[in-house]
Length: 454
Image (cartoon, rainbow, N blue to C red; front, side, top):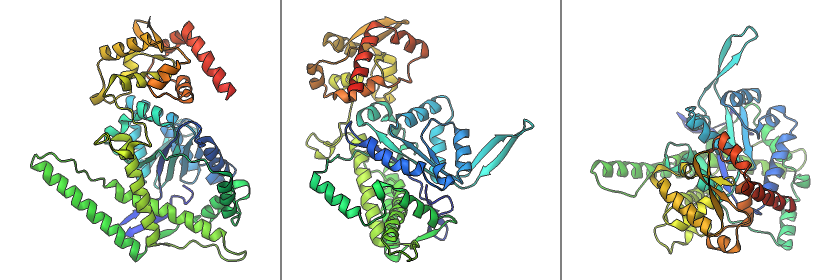
Protein backbone atom coordinates (compact mmCIF):
# COMPACT_ATOMS: atom_id res chain seq x y z
CA UNK A 1 0.00 0.00 0.00
CA UNK A 2 2.81 2.44 0.92
CA UNK A 3 4.52 2.04 -2.46
CA UNK A 4 1.40 3.35 -4.21
CA UNK A 5 -0.47 2.28 -7.35
CA UNK A 6 2.22 3.44 -9.80
CA UNK A 7 4.96 1.19 -8.40
CA UNK A 8 5.27 -2.12 -10.20
CA UNK A 9 7.53 -5.12 -10.62
CA UNK A 10 8.34 -5.70 -14.30
CA UNK A 11 8.68 -9.47 -14.59
CA UNK A 12 8.77 -9.75 -18.40
CA UNK A 13 8.13 -7.43 -21.29
CA UNK A 14 4.39 -8.17 -21.12
CA UNK A 15 3.91 -9.06 -17.44
CA UNK A 16 4.10 -6.89 -14.34
CA UNK A 17 2.92 -7.25 -10.77
CA UNK A 18 1.87 -4.87 -8.01
CA UNK A 19 2.65 -5.32 -4.34
CA UNK A 20 -0.96 -5.87 -3.17
CA UNK A 21 -1.07 -8.45 -0.36
CA UNK A 22 -3.88 -9.93 1.75
CA UNK A 23 -2.72 -11.34 5.08
CA UNK A 24 -4.56 -12.98 8.00
CA UNK A 25 -2.63 -14.09 11.08
CA UNK A 26 -4.31 -16.48 13.49
CA UNK A 27 -3.35 -16.21 17.14
CA UNK A 28 -4.65 -17.48 20.44
CA UNK A 29 -5.72 -15.06 23.22
CA UNK A 30 -2.68 -13.63 25.00
CA UNK A 31 -0.37 -14.01 21.99
CA UNK A 32 0.19 -10.22 21.81
CA UNK A 33 -1.99 -9.52 18.76
CA UNK A 34 -3.37 -6.21 20.05
CA UNK A 35 0.04 -4.75 20.93
CA UNK A 36 1.49 -5.58 17.51
CA UNK A 37 -1.59 -4.24 15.74
CA UNK A 38 -1.62 -0.94 17.66
CA UNK A 39 2.13 -0.34 17.23
CA UNK A 40 1.99 -0.63 13.45
CA UNK A 41 -1.35 1.02 12.66
CA UNK A 42 -0.82 4.03 14.96
CA UNK A 43 2.18 4.99 12.83
CA UNK A 44 -0.01 5.02 9.70
CA UNK A 45 -2.74 7.09 11.40
CA UNK A 46 -0.28 9.82 12.36
CA UNK A 47 1.60 10.05 9.07
CA UNK A 48 2.23 13.56 7.77
CA UNK A 49 1.41 12.36 4.25
CA UNK A 50 -2.38 12.71 4.18
CA UNK A 51 -2.76 10.28 1.26
CA UNK A 52 -1.13 7.52 3.32
CA UNK A 53 -2.82 8.37 6.63
CA UNK A 54 -6.19 8.56 4.87
CA UNK A 55 -5.67 5.15 3.29
CA UNK A 56 -6.04 3.32 6.63
CA UNK A 57 -9.56 1.93 7.02
CA UNK A 58 -10.57 0.12 10.21
CA UNK A 59 -14.36 0.38 10.16
CA UNK A 60 -17.07 -1.37 8.17
CA UNK A 61 -17.24 -0.57 4.47
CA UNK A 62 -19.52 -0.57 1.48
CA UNK A 63 -18.19 -1.14 -2.01
CA UNK A 64 -18.93 2.42 -3.17
CA UNK A 65 -17.54 3.88 0.06
CA UNK A 66 -14.34 1.84 -0.21
CA UNK A 67 -13.78 2.87 -3.83
CA UNK A 68 -14.34 6.53 -2.89
CA UNK A 69 -11.78 6.22 -0.07
CA UNK A 70 -9.24 4.61 -2.41
CA UNK A 71 -9.74 7.44 -4.89
CA UNK A 72 -9.38 10.15 -2.23
CA UNK A 73 -6.19 8.53 -0.85
CA UNK A 74 -4.44 8.61 -4.21
CA UNK A 75 -5.30 5.04 -5.16
CA UNK A 76 -4.30 3.55 -1.79
CA UNK A 77 -6.19 1.56 0.84
CA UNK A 78 -5.18 -0.54 3.83
CA UNK A 79 -8.01 -2.45 5.48
CA UNK A 80 -6.63 -3.30 8.93
CA UNK A 81 -8.54 -5.21 11.60
CA UNK A 82 -7.54 -6.15 15.11
CA UNK A 83 -10.24 -8.83 14.78
CA UNK A 84 -10.88 -9.85 11.16
CA UNK A 85 -14.29 -11.35 11.90
CA UNK A 86 -15.71 -7.95 10.89
CA UNK A 87 -14.21 -8.23 7.41
CA UNK A 88 -14.99 -11.88 6.68
CA UNK A 89 -18.54 -11.60 8.03
CA UNK A 90 -19.16 -8.61 5.73
CA UNK A 91 -17.85 -10.58 2.74
CA UNK A 92 -20.05 -13.58 3.55
CA UNK A 93 -23.09 -11.38 4.14
CA UNK A 94 -22.48 -9.47 0.90
CA UNK A 95 -22.16 -12.72 -1.05
CA UNK A 96 -25.41 -13.99 0.45
CA UNK A 97 -27.11 -10.76 -0.63
CA UNK A 98 -25.89 -11.23 -4.21
CA UNK A 99 -23.21 -8.52 -4.18
CA UNK A 100 -20.32 -10.90 -5.04
CA UNK A 101 -17.86 -9.22 -2.65
CA UNK A 102 -15.39 -12.09 -3.02
CA UNK A 103 -15.09 -11.30 -6.73
CA UNK A 104 -14.70 -7.60 -5.94
CA UNK A 105 -11.74 -8.21 -3.61
CA UNK A 106 -10.17 -10.60 -6.10
CA UNK A 107 -10.28 -7.79 -8.66
CA UNK A 108 -8.71 -5.30 -6.21
CA UNK A 109 -5.94 -7.79 -5.46
CA UNK A 110 -5.27 -8.16 -9.19
CA UNK A 111 -5.27 -4.39 -9.72
CA UNK A 112 -8.24 -4.43 -12.09
CA UNK A 113 -9.86 -1.06 -12.98
CA UNK A 114 -13.00 -0.17 -11.03
CA UNK A 115 -15.89 2.14 -11.83
CA UNK A 116 -16.65 4.87 -9.29
CA UNK A 117 -20.19 6.28 -9.34
CA UNK A 118 -20.77 9.66 -7.67
CA UNK A 119 -23.87 11.81 -7.37
CA UNK A 120 -23.47 15.33 -8.78
CA UNK A 121 -25.02 18.53 -7.42
CA UNK A 122 -27.84 18.38 -9.97
CA UNK A 123 -28.76 14.82 -8.92
CA UNK A 124 -27.13 13.04 -11.83
CA UNK A 125 -24.85 10.03 -11.52
CA UNK A 126 -21.29 10.53 -12.70
CA UNK A 127 -19.14 7.53 -13.62
CA UNK A 128 -15.35 7.51 -13.57
CA UNK A 129 -12.75 4.79 -13.95
CA UNK A 130 -10.31 4.11 -11.13
CA UNK A 131 -7.61 2.65 -13.35
CA UNK A 132 -4.97 1.75 -10.73
CA UNK A 133 -5.01 1.01 -7.02
CA UNK A 134 -2.74 -0.31 -4.30
CA UNK A 135 -4.79 -2.24 -1.74
CA UNK A 136 -3.76 -4.31 1.26
CA UNK A 137 -5.83 -6.26 3.79
CA UNK A 138 -4.38 -7.38 7.09
CA UNK A 139 -5.41 -8.34 10.60
CA UNK A 140 -5.68 -10.99 13.27
CA UNK A 141 -8.17 -13.72 14.07
CA UNK A 142 -8.47 -16.42 16.71
CA UNK A 143 -7.99 -19.85 15.08
CA UNK A 144 -11.06 -21.62 16.38
CA UNK A 145 -13.70 -18.94 15.55
CA UNK A 146 -12.05 -18.43 12.14
CA UNK A 147 -12.20 -22.09 11.15
CA UNK A 148 -15.70 -22.65 12.51
CA UNK A 149 -17.22 -19.50 10.99
CA UNK A 150 -15.24 -19.02 7.78
CA UNK A 151 -13.25 -22.18 7.07
CA UNK A 152 -15.66 -23.20 4.32
CA UNK A 153 -14.64 -20.14 2.25
CA UNK A 154 -11.47 -22.01 1.29
CA UNK A 155 -13.46 -25.05 0.13
CA UNK A 156 -15.30 -22.94 -2.46
CA UNK A 157 -12.12 -22.67 -4.56
CA UNK A 158 -13.25 -19.42 -6.23
CA UNK A 159 -9.87 -17.68 -5.87
CA UNK A 160 -10.78 -15.51 -2.88
CA UNK A 161 -9.03 -17.43 -0.09
CA UNK A 162 -6.24 -18.48 -2.48
CA UNK A 163 -5.23 -14.81 -2.58
CA UNK A 164 -4.88 -14.66 1.21
CA UNK A 165 -1.69 -15.49 3.07
CA UNK A 166 -2.91 -17.24 6.22
CA UNK A 167 -0.77 -18.54 9.06
CA UNK A 168 -1.02 -19.56 12.67
CA UNK A 169 2.53 -18.91 13.91
CA UNK A 170 3.54 -20.35 17.25
CA UNK A 171 3.75 -17.46 19.73
CA UNK A 172 6.99 -17.08 21.70
CA UNK A 173 7.51 -14.97 24.80
CA UNK A 174 10.95 -13.35 24.87
CA UNK A 175 13.04 -13.72 28.00
CA UNK A 176 14.39 -10.46 29.51
CA UNK A 177 17.88 -11.08 28.05
CA UNK A 178 16.41 -11.83 24.62
CA UNK A 179 14.33 -8.65 24.76
CA UNK A 180 17.41 -6.58 25.67
CA UNK A 181 19.24 -8.10 22.70
CA UNK A 182 16.36 -7.27 20.35
CA UNK A 183 16.27 -3.66 21.57
CA UNK A 184 20.02 -3.36 21.11
CA UNK A 185 19.77 -4.72 17.55
CA UNK A 186 17.22 -2.06 16.55
CA UNK A 187 18.89 0.80 18.43
CA UNK A 188 20.88 1.70 15.31
CA UNK A 189 17.72 2.66 13.46
CA UNK A 190 15.75 5.91 14.05
CA UNK A 191 12.75 4.09 15.52
CA UNK A 192 12.20 6.07 18.68
CA UNK A 193 9.74 4.27 20.99
CA UNK A 194 9.10 1.69 18.28
CA UNK A 195 7.71 4.40 15.97
CA UNK A 196 7.39 2.88 12.51
CA UNK A 197 6.74 6.23 10.86
CA UNK A 198 10.41 6.58 9.87
CA UNK A 199 10.11 3.44 7.75
CA UNK A 200 6.71 4.36 6.32
CA UNK A 201 7.77 7.90 5.45
CA UNK A 202 10.91 6.70 3.71
CA UNK A 203 8.96 4.18 1.63
CA UNK A 204 6.31 6.76 0.76
CA UNK A 205 8.94 9.36 -0.20
CA UNK A 206 10.83 6.97 -2.51
CA UNK A 207 7.65 5.96 -4.34
CA UNK A 208 5.87 9.30 -4.81
CA UNK A 209 6.09 9.04 -8.60
CA UNK A 210 6.19 5.26 -8.75
CA UNK A 211 9.18 2.93 -9.22
CA UNK A 212 9.74 0.21 -11.82
CA UNK A 213 11.39 -2.75 -10.08
CA UNK A 214 12.90 -5.74 -11.86
CA UNK A 215 14.33 -9.16 -11.02
CA UNK A 216 18.07 -9.78 -11.12
CA UNK A 217 19.36 -12.55 -13.41
CA UNK A 218 19.58 -14.95 -10.46
CA UNK A 219 16.07 -14.09 -9.23
CA UNK A 220 14.70 -14.34 -12.78
CA UNK A 221 16.18 -17.84 -13.14
CA UNK A 222 14.51 -19.00 -9.91
CA UNK A 223 11.22 -17.47 -11.07
CA UNK A 224 11.43 -19.36 -14.38
CA UNK A 225 12.14 -22.61 -12.49
CA UNK A 226 8.99 -22.10 -10.41
CA UNK A 227 6.89 -21.34 -13.50
CA UNK A 228 8.23 -24.49 -15.19
CA UNK A 229 7.48 -26.64 -12.14
CA UNK A 230 3.92 -25.34 -11.79
CA UNK A 231 3.29 -25.72 -15.54
CA UNK A 232 4.33 -29.40 -15.43
CA UNK A 233 2.11 -29.99 -12.36
CA UNK A 234 -0.87 -28.30 -14.00
CA UNK A 235 -0.50 -30.10 -17.34
CA UNK A 236 -0.07 -33.44 -15.57
CA UNK A 237 -3.22 -32.93 -13.49
CA UNK A 238 -5.24 -32.02 -16.61
CA UNK A 239 -4.02 -35.11 -18.49
CA UNK A 240 -4.82 -37.34 -15.52
CA UNK A 241 -8.31 -35.86 -15.20
CA UNK A 242 -8.98 -36.37 -18.92
CA UNK A 243 -8.13 -40.05 -18.54
CA UNK A 244 -10.66 -40.29 -15.72
CA UNK A 245 -8.01 -41.29 -13.19
CA UNK A 246 -8.12 -40.10 -9.59
CA UNK A 247 -5.24 -37.90 -8.52
CA UNK A 248 -4.32 -36.04 -5.37
CA UNK A 249 -1.86 -33.82 -7.20
CA UNK A 250 -2.90 -30.19 -7.45
CA UNK A 251 -1.20 -27.14 -8.89
CA UNK A 252 -1.53 -23.78 -7.21
CA UNK A 253 -0.57 -21.30 -9.92
CA UNK A 254 -1.29 -18.49 -7.45
CA UNK A 255 2.10 -19.43 -5.95
CA UNK A 256 3.80 -17.76 -8.90
CA UNK A 257 2.11 -14.42 -8.29
CA UNK A 258 2.46 -14.60 -4.51
CA UNK A 259 6.19 -15.33 -4.77
CA UNK A 260 6.62 -12.15 -6.84
CA UNK A 261 4.47 -10.03 -4.52
CA UNK A 262 6.37 -11.30 -1.47
CA UNK A 263 9.73 -10.60 -3.11
CA UNK A 264 8.45 -7.13 -4.07
CA UNK A 265 7.49 -6.28 -0.48
CA UNK A 266 10.52 -7.92 1.18
CA UNK A 267 12.83 -5.95 -1.13
CA UNK A 268 11.17 -2.62 -0.31
CA UNK A 269 11.33 -3.31 3.44
CA UNK A 270 14.99 -4.36 3.23
CA UNK A 271 15.83 -1.25 1.25
CA UNK A 272 14.07 0.93 3.85
CA UNK A 273 16.20 -0.54 6.65
CA UNK A 274 19.36 -0.25 4.54
CA UNK A 275 18.70 3.41 3.82
CA UNK A 276 17.87 4.16 7.45
CA UNK A 277 21.28 2.82 8.51
CA UNK A 278 23.16 5.15 6.14
CA UNK A 279 25.08 8.08 7.57
CA UNK A 280 23.48 11.52 7.48
CA UNK A 281 23.81 13.21 4.11
CA UNK A 282 24.01 10.01 2.06
CA UNK A 283 21.29 9.66 -0.58
CA UNK A 284 18.53 7.30 0.54
CA UNK A 285 17.56 5.87 -2.83
CA UNK A 286 16.06 2.39 -3.16
CA UNK A 287 17.81 -0.06 -5.51
CA UNK A 288 15.50 -1.04 -8.35
CA UNK A 289 16.77 -4.61 -8.86
CA UNK A 290 15.51 -7.45 -6.64
CA UNK A 291 18.36 -9.79 -5.75
CA UNK A 292 18.28 -13.58 -5.98
CA UNK A 293 18.68 -13.91 -2.21
CA UNK A 294 15.53 -11.80 -1.72
CA UNK A 295 13.53 -13.97 -4.12
CA UNK A 296 14.83 -17.07 -2.33
CA UNK A 297 13.45 -15.65 0.94
CA UNK A 298 10.14 -15.01 -0.78
CA UNK A 299 9.98 -18.64 -1.94
CA UNK A 300 10.74 -19.88 1.59
CA UNK A 301 8.02 -17.62 3.01
CA UNK A 302 5.56 -18.79 0.34
CA UNK A 303 6.31 -22.41 1.28
CA UNK A 304 5.67 -21.58 4.94
CA UNK A 305 2.26 -20.07 4.16
CA UNK A 306 1.34 -23.02 1.93
CA UNK A 307 2.26 -25.49 4.68
CA UNK A 308 0.14 -23.51 7.13
CA UNK A 309 -2.85 -23.67 4.78
CA UNK A 310 -2.35 -27.41 4.42
CA UNK A 311 -2.54 -27.80 8.19
CA UNK A 312 -5.50 -25.45 8.57
CA UNK A 313 -7.73 -26.65 5.76
CA UNK A 314 -6.67 -30.20 4.87
CA UNK A 315 -7.33 -33.40 6.75
CA UNK A 316 -4.04 -34.92 8.02
CA UNK A 317 -3.07 -38.12 6.18
CA UNK A 318 -2.29 -39.98 9.40
CA UNK A 319 -2.66 -39.58 13.14
CA UNK A 320 1.14 -39.40 13.41
CA UNK A 321 1.32 -36.24 11.32
CA UNK A 322 3.19 -33.77 13.54
CA UNK A 323 2.70 -30.79 11.19
CA UNK A 324 -0.80 -30.25 12.56
CA UNK A 325 0.27 -29.76 16.15
CA UNK A 326 0.40 -25.97 15.91
CA UNK A 327 -3.26 -25.71 14.87
CA UNK A 328 -6.29 -27.26 16.51
CA UNK A 329 -8.26 -27.93 13.33
CA UNK A 330 -11.95 -28.53 13.96
CA UNK A 331 -13.42 -31.28 11.81
CA UNK A 332 -16.93 -32.60 12.06
CA UNK A 333 -16.06 -36.28 11.93
CA UNK A 334 -17.18 -37.08 15.48
CA UNK A 335 -19.79 -36.01 18.00
CA UNK A 336 -17.16 -34.44 20.25
CA UNK A 337 -15.86 -32.09 17.55
CA UNK A 338 -19.44 -31.14 16.66
CA UNK A 339 -20.17 -30.41 20.32
CA UNK A 340 -17.05 -28.28 20.53
CA UNK A 341 -18.26 -26.35 17.50
CA UNK A 342 -21.63 -25.68 19.18
CA UNK A 343 -19.94 -24.49 22.39
CA UNK A 344 -17.60 -22.20 20.43
CA UNK A 345 -20.31 -20.73 18.17
CA UNK A 346 -20.71 -16.99 18.28
CA UNK A 347 -23.19 -15.63 20.78
CA UNK A 348 -24.94 -17.29 23.70
CA UNK A 349 -27.81 -18.78 21.70
CA UNK A 350 -27.34 -21.38 18.95
CA UNK A 351 -30.02 -22.92 16.73
CA UNK A 352 -29.45 -26.05 14.63
CA UNK A 353 -30.02 -23.93 11.53
CA UNK A 354 -27.58 -21.15 12.49
CA UNK A 355 -24.91 -23.71 13.41
CA UNK A 356 -25.40 -25.67 10.19
CA UNK A 357 -25.11 -22.54 8.05
CA UNK A 358 -21.54 -22.03 9.22
CA UNK A 359 -20.47 -25.36 7.74
CA UNK A 360 -19.78 -26.17 4.13
CA UNK A 361 -22.53 -28.20 2.45
CA UNK A 362 -20.33 -31.30 2.25
CA UNK A 363 -19.79 -31.30 6.02
CA UNK A 364 -23.22 -30.14 7.14
CA UNK A 365 -25.03 -32.70 9.35
CA UNK A 366 -28.79 -32.97 9.46
CA UNK A 367 -30.71 -30.71 11.85
CA UNK A 368 -31.83 -33.77 13.83
CA UNK A 369 -28.18 -34.76 14.39
CA UNK A 370 -27.27 -31.26 15.59
CA UNK A 371 -30.29 -31.26 17.91
CA UNK A 372 -29.22 -34.62 19.37
CA UNK A 373 -25.77 -33.18 20.08
CA UNK A 374 -27.35 -30.17 21.80
CA UNK A 375 -29.43 -32.52 24.00
CA UNK A 376 -26.24 -34.31 25.05
CA UNK A 377 -24.64 -30.98 25.94
CA UNK A 378 -27.72 -30.09 28.00
CA UNK A 379 -27.30 -33.36 29.94
CA UNK A 380 -23.65 -32.45 30.55
CA UNK A 381 -24.68 -29.11 32.06
CA UNK A 382 -23.22 -26.93 29.30
CA UNK A 383 -26.55 -25.31 28.43
CA UNK A 384 -30.32 -25.63 28.09
CA UNK A 385 -32.59 -26.35 25.17
CA UNK A 386 -35.52 -23.96 24.88
CA UNK A 387 -38.25 -23.41 22.30
CA UNK A 388 -38.12 -19.77 21.17
CA UNK A 389 -40.02 -18.28 18.22
CA UNK A 390 -40.88 -21.79 16.96
CA UNK A 391 -37.20 -22.78 16.94
CA UNK A 392 -35.23 -25.13 19.16
CA UNK A 393 -32.47 -23.07 20.75
CA UNK A 394 -29.42 -24.17 22.71
CA UNK A 395 -28.59 -21.57 25.37
CA UNK A 396 -25.04 -21.70 26.69
CA UNK A 397 -24.78 -21.64 30.48
CA UNK A 398 -21.53 -19.91 31.39
CA UNK A 399 -19.14 -20.53 32.97
CA UNK A 400 -18.74 -24.04 31.58
CA UNK A 401 -17.68 -26.61 34.17
CA UNK A 402 -13.99 -27.68 34.26
CA UNK A 403 -15.09 -31.14 33.09
CA UNK A 404 -16.71 -29.67 29.96
CA UNK A 405 -13.68 -27.43 29.24
CA UNK A 406 -11.27 -30.34 29.61
CA UNK A 407 -13.34 -32.74 27.53
CA UNK A 408 -13.73 -30.35 24.58
CA UNK A 409 -10.37 -28.55 24.95
CA UNK A 410 -11.92 -25.15 25.61
CA UNK A 411 -9.98 -22.07 26.71
CA UNK A 412 -11.96 -19.78 29.02
CA UNK A 413 -10.83 -16.55 27.30
CA UNK A 414 -11.68 -18.01 23.88
CA UNK A 415 -15.12 -19.12 25.07
CA UNK A 416 -15.87 -15.68 26.52
CA UNK A 417 -14.83 -13.85 23.37
CA UNK A 418 -16.96 -16.12 21.17
CA UNK A 419 -19.93 -15.65 23.49
CA UNK A 420 -19.79 -11.86 23.08
CA UNK A 421 -19.66 -12.00 19.26
CA UNK A 422 -22.75 -11.30 17.19
CA UNK A 423 -24.22 -14.24 15.30
CA UNK A 424 -25.02 -12.90 11.83
CA UNK A 425 -27.05 -16.01 10.98
CA UNK A 426 -29.74 -15.27 13.58
CA UNK A 427 -32.66 -13.01 12.72
CA UNK A 428 -33.15 -9.73 14.58
CA UNK A 429 -36.36 -11.12 16.09
CA UNK A 430 -34.49 -14.16 17.43
CA UNK A 431 -31.65 -12.04 18.85
CA UNK A 432 -34.15 -9.81 20.65
CA UNK A 433 -35.98 -12.82 22.11
CA UNK A 434 -32.78 -14.52 23.25
CA UNK A 435 -31.28 -11.51 24.99
CA UNK A 436 -34.31 -11.28 27.32
CA UNK A 437 -34.05 -14.89 28.52
CA UNK A 438 -32.88 -15.36 32.09
CA UNK A 439 -30.13 -17.85 31.11
CA UNK A 440 -28.66 -15.44 28.55
CA UNK A 441 -28.77 -12.48 30.93
CA UNK A 442 -26.91 -14.43 33.64
CA UNK A 443 -24.32 -15.85 31.25
CA UNK A 444 -23.66 -12.49 29.61
CA UNK A 445 -23.24 -10.85 33.02
CA UNK A 446 -20.67 -13.51 33.92
CA UNK A 447 -18.71 -12.99 30.69
CA UNK A 448 -18.72 -9.21 31.04
CA UNK A 449 -17.44 -9.51 34.63
CA UNK A 450 -14.64 -11.76 33.41
CA UNK A 451 -13.73 -9.36 30.59
CA UNK A 452 -13.73 -6.39 32.99
CA UNK A 453 -11.44 -8.19 35.45
CA UNK A 454 -8.97 -8.98 32.64
